[in-house]
Image (cartoon, rainbow, N blue to C red):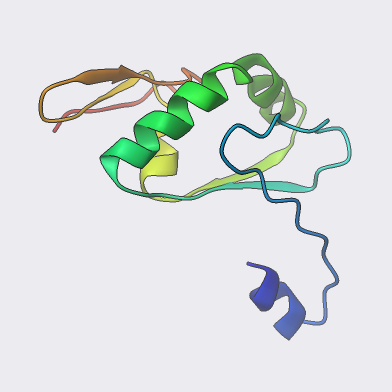
Length: 99
C-alpha cells in the first residue's frame, strides 16, 4: 500500500501493528489495513483484535476507512469456520464464513 501511494506522489506514514502490540489511538488514522493469512495466523490476530473490538467499531462508525483483505475480511464478521473449529469474529459486519 505504501509503495502504491508513493507511485502516485502521496506521502504516507505507516504504523505497523505486530504481534502483541497494543492498538494505537485511532483518532489520527486515515486508513486501517487488515491483511490475510493462514488459519492459525488469523486465529491469533482475531484473538488479539478482540481486545480492541469497540475501538475498531467506533473508528468505522465515525467514518474511518478500513481495508480488509482475504482472512482479514472474515475477521470482521460474526464467525468463521475452520476445519474443526468455529472462530468468533469481531461482529463488526453481519457476515460469516462456513468452510
